[in-house]
Structure formats: C-alpha cells, structure tokens
Length: 245
Ligand SMILES: Cc1ncc(C[n+]2csc(CCOP(=O)(O)OP(=O)(O)O)c2C)c(N)n1
Ligand code: SF4
Image (cartoon, rainbow, N blue to C red):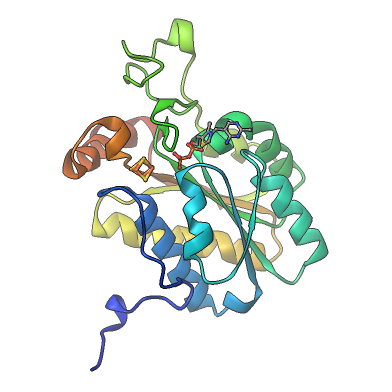
C-alpha cells in the first residue's frame, strides 16, 4: 500500500512509541527535527545530545546517535562532540528548566564562543518532568507549584527571553522562536529548525530555535486549552519569528 509522505514515519525516528502526555508539544517538535534531519540527508552524521526532563525521551525516539548529558549540561557536551567530530551535525535538545536555569551559564558561554552546534530549546514555562515548578520562563502571574498565588516579579523576578539574550552575543548566528499551535505555525517552525541546522553546516556559528510548547499536565488544562494558553499568553509576551539571521 502506498503511504503518503506526510504520514510516513521519518527514518530519523525509531519505532518506540512517544510517551508524552496528550497534547504535549514535545512529540511534534521531535517529529519535526527528525523530518528535517531526513530531508537534509544527514542522519548518518548527526549526533543528538539529550538532557534531563521530559525532553530526555528523545534519546529513545531519535534514530541517530545520541549522548546523554547531565541536567543543564547539553551545551558543554555538544561542544566536546563538535570539537572531536567537526564533520558531524550536533543537535542539542533541552527544556527551559535545563537551559534557562541550571544550564544558563553553559548556553551563554557556548553561544559566546560561537560553537558550531544547534540547540532546540523547548519552552513550556515550567519544569515539566518534576511536576510543574516555576522556571525562569514562567509568565508573570502564572500559577505553578512553587508560585501557587502566581509569579510575582518583586519576589520571583521577570521571565527570561533567551533568544534576545543570546542574540546580542557575537558568536550566535541564528536565533528564532516558533510554536506548535497550528499547522501553519508547525510549518514555520520546521523552516526555522532547518535554517538553524544549515547555519551549523555552513560553519557560521551557534544556532538555537526556541519553541513555545504546551504542557497541559502541569498547566492543569485540557490539550486545546493549553494550545489557547500558548496563543493568548505566551505568544504575546515572547513573540514569534526569527530574532537573528
Ligand atoms: C543536577 C540536577 N538537578 C535537578 C534535577 C531534577 N530535575 C529532573 S527534571 C527537572 C526539570 C526539567 O524541566 P525542563 O528542563 O523544563 O524540561 P521539561 O521536563 O519541561 O521538558 C529537574 C529539576 C536533576 N535531575 N539533576
Ligand atoms: S509533563 Fe508536560 S512536558 Fe512532560 S510529557 Fe507531560 S505535557 Fe509534556
């Protein structure tokens, strides 16, 4: 039977079934990364770096070489891999707890050094796997397990816009922010992922794609409500588009 290309599983995904919660953005993002790796024909020379958090599950899903990093340490591991395997494409995959909190110094220095690696950065505004504590990306007023009355800027500070923070560094070559809330946004996000990986292949510098992504379980919402929350709350605050090209 002929299967339409859109419905075929990318070669860069294994047969392991996704274990994300219903409505989680990670599954769409993982599939997009796999499609881009297939389309660029780089599967045999791609190495992924998996973090800690729900983002770690890509370790089982990506059908290319994977290395695990400690929480927040994706960028140093990616740096080491790129330096010993300069002809390979190195793909980091991290959540916002991992990248913007415990791993913030690591990503800033990798970006400042202009490491030729690409990071897919999944911003779901909470620590997902550990049940929804406040992350650096939590919106003002957002209720989490550690901010039950809402994030208060006086006490908890302001959310971090990672793309804008890193875009000011000379070592960064491509920064973009997309989301998974509609077919159109998914197509745009795929373009960003492809451009980020091409940036690395062209040896131009550090590249990162941030994805505003629903976490219905920790937001205590149904999947459609979570998508609406991304559109109504996250997108107006963070903005979508290419931040640096
Ligand atoms: C050094 C260290 N500190 C803390 C933890 C506990 N921990 C596991 S997952 C996680 C949060 C992950 O959140 P995020 O990076 O946003 O990823 P998500 O689960 O949302 O995909 C934390 C704090 C750990 N495993 N290692
Ligand atoms: S807890 Fe959140 S980030 Fe983790 S799988 Fe469930 S919806 Fe996704």
